[in-house]
Each structure stands twice: as structure tokens, then as C-alpha cells.
Amino acid sequence: MSTNPLANDPMFPSNTVPDLSSPAPAISRLAGASPALVRPLCLLAGLAALLAPALWNGFAVIFYDTGGYVQAALEMRLIPGRSLVYGLFLQAASLNWWSLWGPVLAQALATLWLVYLLLRCHGLPAGPPALALWAIGLAGLTGISWYSAQLMPDILVPLVVLTLWLLALHWPRLRRPEQAGLIGLALLGLLSHMSCLALALGLLAVILVARVATRRWPITIAVVPPVAVVLAALLLMPLAHLTLTGTAGYTPGGPTFLFGRLVQDGIVQRWLAEHCPVPGIQLCDLQHRLPATADEFLWTGQSPFQDLGGWQGGAEPELKRLTVAAVTAYPGMTLWTTGRSTAQQLVKVATGDALDEGHFDSRGYLLAHLPHLAPSFMAARQQQEAVSRDLFATLNLVHVPVALASVAGLLPLTLWFLRHRRHDLAALAVFVFLALAGNAFICGALSNPHDRYQSRLVWLAPLVAGMAVAAWRQHRPGSRLPATAA
Image 1 (spheres, rainbow, N blue to C red):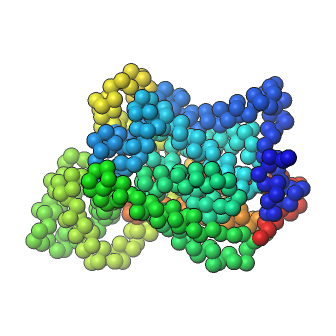
Image 2 (cartoon, rainbow, N blue to C red; image 1 turned 90 degrees about the vertical axis):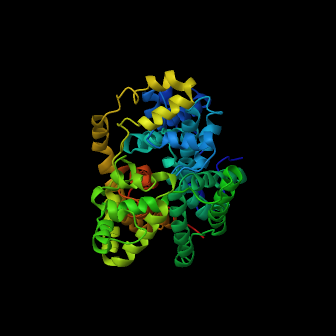
Image 3 (cartoon, one colour; image 1 turned 90 degrees about the horizontal axis):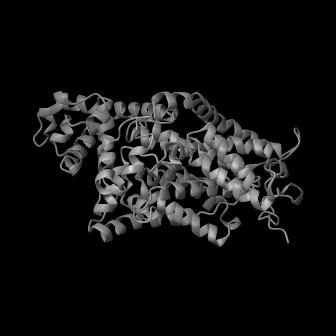
């Protein structure tokens, strides 16, 4: 009996279904080993590619925010911009802080699994040798491994995009354990980062519109699974916070990031200059100290934000009031800067944003509260200042042009897929493009543009481009690709 999960799939004619269970003979011969050995070796190679930065570093890669996630879990409290759920994931995956290799291994495994499911569901070779080649290719051409190997929820953003796609377009084609795994992974991502939740709400709208717009296409869109997952996350986050901390609500801090963007674009300064003094607005007396960028406003000790109470919550009521007042007073300026920030974010895709810096807050917290990890942590290249700008400048000679070319190619690829009656891949290309555009708006306009925000999921575009090449290679040049069927 065939073990190929697509063997009886009406979407793929029997003469075009790839063998997804057997390793490629060429790779087997090159390895000089039996298929039983090649399969695990290929999977290990794929995992190694996705963990390469951590393996080279000697420790999982950290960021400024890493210590905040650990702190949220250890102190069991809500910290602005730092998800308690992701902190608990770090604690669980590290076996109660025994080893921080656990979380990055789990992230790499989840990434590899989702790429496998995506390839398999679209009828492309997805066995261990093919999967290893995909992982190595993506790790070499994009920044994917710098996110899967990092103690941050950033890798979960693209994984949420893929889980929603698979739940909506391939639900009947998935086995029960796979359906359950996708639901669990989607919930982890949605509860780990507010931008995931915002992006998912936008993608739900895309799915609902696509359900109507593609009625004549030979694809079936399941609305219930993705809608149910996102609604569950919306309900679970405040309930989980209430149960664990006694405070219901979502991860705090979102409005403050938006205010920082309004400062960076000069909208707040204009409002204060034209309206102050105003009773109850302390920034009227501090406006001369407003910095030029959002990062300076939010993170420097000399910022007037600290005078208002900073991240401890005292500043939020005034910032919310000023945000509403400034946006209402200058809708045209707000709209223009929103579009500009979204466009800037869409093309800010460089790998390594701030990874070459000190991260002293995270270092201090990890060393103080997880001292048993100190020897290996401090011996890592990142803590030895060996992660340099020159390293990322070299990587970005490849990563940036590949990302930008792939994003620019998504809509032309959509037309190419439609011409060859691959409606499933055409829909995927549009879905990824809208996910990238939505992320650019959420992170660029509602916060402020940073390379990290877009590069963490821009590898989805080269993935789709690679799938187009794989689909073409399954058939002789000039022949039609297998048509999707209802």
C-alpha cells in the first residue's frame, strides 16, 4: 500500500503525484548510506541549517527583549511588550530553565514541520532529502535561521501565517494529529506576540473575502478552523492572564509604540506647539525634550517618557489622550506618514537588526536569575562581541536582494500560476503578499519601521518562489503544470 499522502488526492493526477516517502536516489548514492540512515541524517541537516547561528554562537541567540520574556515567566506578571505566554514557553521548552537550547530546537522543529506540510499539501517533494535542501537553501538565502535560533517569538509570526494558510486551504488533507498540531502552534504564536494577533485578524478578513471571490476557482477554503483558532486566542489571552496574574487583558504596551511613531513623524510635536498649555497634559512642559526618534523616546533614560512614569504604566493615560487628539487634529498628516512608514517597512528586510549590540539588560537579568547558565552563556560569541555588523553586511549582500526580488515577484508569479491552472499556488502567492503588506502596516505604521519586523517573515516570499521552481521542475519545460481540481 502506498504511504504517499497525496496518492488518492483528486487535486493531483496519479501520474504527477511525487513520491514523498522515499528519499531521492541521487542523495542516497552521494551519502553512501542506506535509506534508513539517509532519512534521519537529512532531517538533522535541515535542523542544523535552521539552528546554524546558535550552533556557531555556542548558545541560543538573544535580543534586547529576551530577558523581559524570562522575567515575565519567573515573576508571573504582565510586562509591556513582553508576552507572558512566550515566557512560559521558554520555561517549558527549556525544561524549567535547564537548557535554553530547548526553545530554539522546538522553534526549528516547528519551522521545518510547517515547510514540510506546505510542500506536501501542494504536491511538491517533501521527503527528508528534499526538506533538508529546502532548509539549507532558505538558511543560506534568507535570515530564517537567525529567527528560529533566537530566544524571541519573532519566528512565530511567519509560522502563524503558514498555519492559517494550511488550516484554511488544506484542512481536509491533514491528518488529525497534524490538525491538532497546527491549532496548538497557531495558538502559541497568537498568544506570544500582539502583532501576530493583529496580523491574524487581517488574514482572517482575507480568508473570508477569498471564500467569496474564488468560488469559481477549483479550490476549497475552510473558514471555520482559522476563525475558531483566532477567536480562541482572543478569548484565551485575557483569561490566561487573569488566571496567572490576577489581571485580565492583553499584553500591555501597544498604544505606547504608536505614540512613539507619532513622535518620530513630528505629529505630537506639532500638536503640543499649537495647543499647549493644556490642563492635565504634562508633556506641554516637557516638549522641548522630545527626541527625534521613537526608539529614543521609548528607551532612553533622558526621555520625557520616563518623567511621565515610563513603562510602569503611569504614562499611558496621557499618551492615549494625546494620540487621539493629534490624529484627530491632523488626519491628512497622519494618513501620509502612515503610508510612508508602511512603505518603508515593506522594504526594510535586512538580517541582523541590533543583534550585534550589547543587550545588557537581557544579559544582566539572565546572569542574575539563571546563574547556572552563566559559563556557556558568557562564552558565546554574541557575548564576546564577535557578532559584528560586518558579518551581517556580508550576509545581506545575498539576503536583501533575494528578499526584495522575491516580494516583487509574488504578484507576477500569481499570474504565472493562474496561466498554468495552479490556483492553489496562485492563492498562496497572494496570501503571502498580503501577509507581508499587513505586517508592514502593523509594525511600520503602528510602531515604527525596523528591519527586524519585516525580515522575520520575508523569507516566506523566497519560499513561494522556490515552490514555483519546484513545480516547474516536476514537468518538462513547455508542458502545463497539473491543474488543480475541485
